Image 1 (spheres, rainbow, N blue to C red):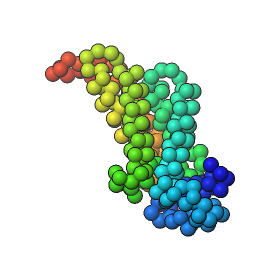
Image 2 (tube, rainbow, N blue to C red):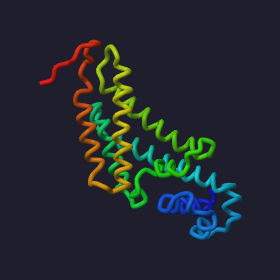
Image 3 (cartoon, rainbow, N blue to C red):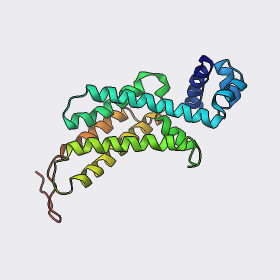
Image 4 (cartoon, rainbow, N blue to C red):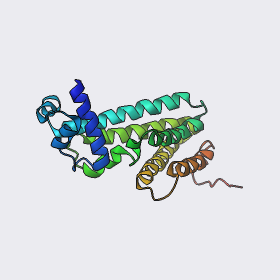
Length: 206
């Protein structure tokens, strides 16, 4: 990518995230980046492709960021799950460009047409997150009857907490949504390693 194209993509990211994808036109991106519209179209072909590359680059940075924190997390399975919530909090604090919540969720609010070329990038990122939580959940639950179903259910619940924290962070309607989501995740994980009760049997709790 040429320096001009890099400047254009950086400008597009700032503008799309801060103002919304539909509100930002190619003229504004070009002016912000100090390039011509011809340069933009020569490199990207269309505004839709700029959106694709903006979201794909953001997704790649998030995956690298999260992988780094997971690699540094303790090996205990529950600690690795909680490390995802810690990583998300660190991500939102790392720079102002994360202050409005999840860029993918924000983009989906504007791009709900499955035929849009950016749609698979948005949904693919969330599918990747669900697969990650499910994989981590499999390490938490004990082997035995129904372990896969329990891991799948736990993974979905963890993702709901995680995504809800991102949305609440962007809305800023109450403090520390990631801390609250993490605490709820700890509660879920506390009983997740217990063997599943036989069908129809209720496990007593103290």
